[in-house]
Image (spheres, one colour):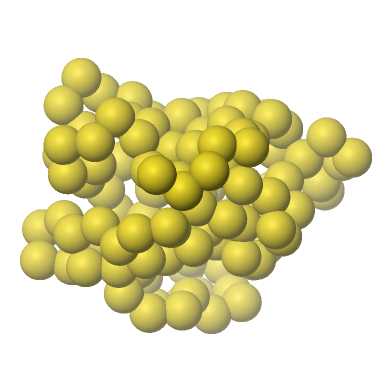
Amino acid sequence: MLDRHSLKAGDRVKLSGGYDNALWLCGRSHVLGIVDALIPGQNDQPAVVVRLDEPIEFDGIRGSLVVLELRYVGATWGPTGTVHVELCDFNPENKRWQDRRQGKWVESHATYELTTEAVA
């Protein structure tokens, strides 16, 4: 369950890669977006759908929506954390990853953080 320090719809987030060469960022150091929705996650914590300020393209998929899932067992949503990133060219259903159409898995160790950074 989310606590008062966790992400909510309307929050602004910054996503960066967990690897030196995060190809899904298309040469950028990070991407920005707004939390669009919380949907059931694979485990106890919900997944977070983020609408990116600008679409990204990776491995033949171009989309403006990413679904974030917490990376580590026992992790909870807060001001920053490590997440899996799934790129979608569709609106993900309000269902667990296992039970819905799946996007393209692009990163297993991305970092998210709450931010007030404006659109570039």
